[in-house]
Image (tube, rainbow, N blue to C red):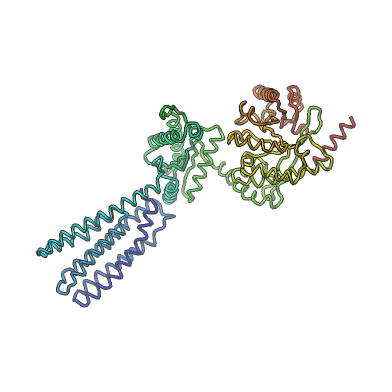
Length: 623
C-alpha cells in the first residue's frame, strides 16, 4: 500500500523530467538543422512538447489532500505512462542520431542514451515498476548497436554496456530497498509490526476522500485494552510487550481482510473497515466486528509462566460522505471508547448524534471557560454543614459559573472539561484563593466555623506544584488558627493514581493544619487498605446513597456500613444530599455526625450565607 509521500515524491520528479527533456532537446534540433535531419528532429521535439504538456497537466492535477484512493491510483497510472513516454522518446532520438556516424553525432547519441539511463536509475529508484523497464528500454538498443558494428572493440563495448545495465539496475534496486526499509520504519510500529498513527491518519484521510467521491459509508473502531497498565506495573514491560503481540495476532486474525489495522500507541489500536452503500449495513458490520474482537481478546493469554486475562473497550465512529477531517473521527471514536470505560469497560459504544451534540456543547464550554475567570464569571457559594444539635458548624465551598452565553453551567458539566483540558489548575487556584480569602474575612468578622470544606480535583491534587501553591495561599490569607478549620475534600479517584505520592502530599499539607475528607465514599476505588493508609479525618456519605435511603435496602445497608466503618477508623462523618426529615432521622439514628443538604439549606452566596448563620444563631439563642 503506497503512502502519500511516495506519490508526492513521484509528483516532484515531473518538473525535473520536463526540464531535462525540453532543454537538451533544443540541441538536437540545432544539430538536426546542421546535418540534414531537421524534420525528424522537429517531429521528435513536437512529441516531446506534447509529452511535457501532459506532464504539466498531471503535475497540476495532483492534490494529496483531496484525492481519493481511486483517483490517486488513476493519477499514478497516468504518471507511469508519462515516464515511459519520456524515456521512449529518448530511445527514439538515439535511434535517429546514432546512424549519423559521418558527422560523429553517434557519440552524442551514445552519451545521451547513457545519461538518460543514469537519470532513470536515479529519479525512478523509488518504484521498481518504473526503473526496471525504463533502464532496459534505454540500454538494450545501445547494446544491440554496439553488437551490430561487427568490430572487436564494439563487442567489448557491448559487454561493457551490459555490465553498465546491470550496475544501473543494481544501484536502483539497492536504493529502492533502502527507501522501502526507511518507509516501513516510518509507517509501521516497531513492536507490533502494524501501521503506526502517522500512516493511519494519512490512510484514513484517503479513505474519507474516497467515501466523499463514492457517497458510501465506512467505519472506525478504536480499541483500548482494559487495565493493561496493571500488567506492565506488576509483571514488567517484557510480559506486557508479549501480551501486546498476542493481542495483535488476534486483531489480525479476527478483523475482515478489507480492514486496515494500526497501533496508535501504548495499548490503543484502531481499525478502519470497508465501504457500504447503506449506513445501517455499515453500522451492523462495525458492531459485529467489534463484538467478535471483544470475544477474541478475552480468551486467556499464556505468556511464559503467566496466564493472563484482558478485556477491551471499543469506540465506534461511522464515516460518511461530506466528512473531511480524519483527526475528528479518531476523536469521535476515542470519545465513544471512553463512554465504554465510564460504563464499566468490556463493551462497545457507537458515537451517535446525541454524543455529537454533547461534544459540541463540551467544546463550547471549553472555549468560554477560557474567558470565565478574567471576566469574573466564576464565583463560590457556600452550603451550611449542621451538627446533630442543629447548629451550623461548617460550610462547603461550591464553585458556580454563570455565563452570559450559556447561563448557569452546573459544576458536573464544566469541572470534568476543566480537568481534561488542564484548565483545572488555574481554576483550582482561583477557587482556593477565593475560599481562603472568604474564610479569613469571616474569622476576622467573628463568624467562626469549626470546619470549612474545599473540593480538590484529582488532577489538581496530583499536580507537582499543588502543595507549594497551598502553602503560599495559606501564608497570604490565613493565620495558623484559621488553617485548622480547613478540610480538603478529595475523591476516591485520587487513590487510583500514585498512592505513595498522594500520601506524601497529604502529610505535607497536614503539617500546615489542613485536614482531609474522602468525598463520595463508596462509589469509586477505595478499599479498607486505602482507608487505613490515607491520613483521613472524615468520610462523606455520597448523596446517591442518601437520596435512595427510602427506596433501596442495599443503599440503606451501604450507608450504615460506611458510618460503622468511619466509627471503626475514628473518622468523622458528613452526609451530603440530605433533603427530607426521614433521611435526616435515619442518619441521626445510625450515628452520622454532620448533615448537608436542602433539608437544612441550599448553597448560598457569601452574603446570604452570612445572614443565614446569623439567623440560625439568633433562633437558637431565642430557644
